[in-house]
Length: 273
Image (cartoon, rainbow, N blue to C red; front, side, top):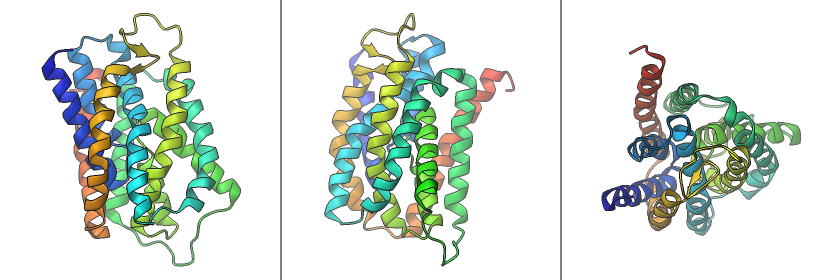
């Protein structure tokens, strides 16, 4: 890598760490498109570029989640009862998604899938429909199933799961700041399970770039993790100074912008534009 490319990765880590702390997400919604651009410049095999961007992005969440959780815990905002109930399903879903389902998607379809989920998530946040006051979190089966869905979908798009977990918790009348804080804690089991899946799923594949473990590109992981861990606590501090409506709008607008880029990339692959 050139010095410019290293600086770009360090800067990306700073931005994603800030976003992770601010919005309770792993930063994957920002990281994946930029890593796709960088890995293209690195001349990685086209068939692996998006898969490696997603896998590397997800693995960095292991480190950003640790720093975000420490900062959120000081604010006493994490609902650990929710985290522990969702975690078993998340681990199962993340492992299956990263090792089996992930390899079934070609790059253009994975790109389209990623964009559609971003648009869905932004719609959920912008509409801000008020849940029924009587609605509460589901029972064991419902939480296990929801956790499995969060783990599976997160492993396919390289995100920390907030695009499903935050709307789900808000729908169940969990206060927004608690939902965002809890989603930070959920990022850790999501990332660990998915990372293991990416290594297993890519075992024995030919032409993977040097310094890769499975689909995970270690130099990018190191650079991004280093700076994201520094800025995540700053994002947490800012988040607690903003109101719920502001957080929702920031989250939604961010997702829409990235979704448009990823849709255009997918359509170009299909020859539509």
